[in-house]
Amino acid sequence: MLKSKVEALLNDALEEDGSLFLIDFSILADNTIRVVLDGDEGVTVQDCVRISRAIENELDSEEYDFSLEVTSSGAASPLVMPRQYVKNIGRKLAVRTPGGEFEGNLIGTNEEGIVLEWKAREPKPIGKGKVTVQKKEQINFSDIKEAKVILKF
Image (cartoon, rainbow, N blue to C red):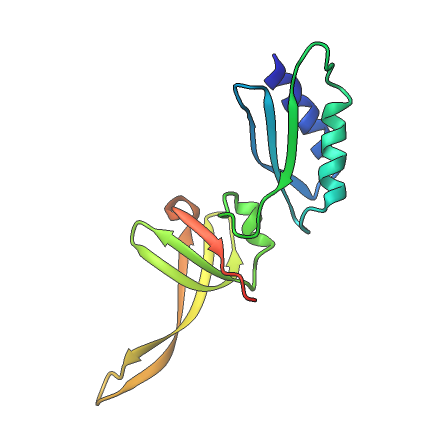
C-alpha cells in the first residue's frame, strides 16, 4: 500500500519536470523510503527538496511511520539507464563487458548502445616500433555489465 502510494506521488512529481528521472526507488523494512534521481542537466538540491516535499506532503504521518531520503545519483555511481549516457557524451568512460574492458571517450549513443573512441599504441604492420591508432567500438546496452564516468581532478 505504502509503496504504490509513494510510487504514484513520485511519478506525478517527476512528470512536472521532464528533465529529472528515477534511477532507484526502494522502501526498506523500517519504512525508510529511498529515492535516487538523475537529470538531463544534473540534479540540484532544490530538485531533491521539491521531490521530497511532493511525497511528504501527501503521506499521512499518522498512517505511515516513515523516513524519506531523496538523493541524486553520485558522480562515481555506475550509469544504469540509457538516458544517462546522453548527458555524458564527450566524457571518458570505463565500460566492462563480457568481452573485456574498454576505456574511451563516449562519442555517441543510439537506441542499441554507445560508441566509445580512444587512441591505442599498436605494433607497426611492417618493421619495428609502434604506431598510434584511433579505435572505435560500438557496445550494446545489453552487453554493458558496468559503466562509470572517469572523473578528472
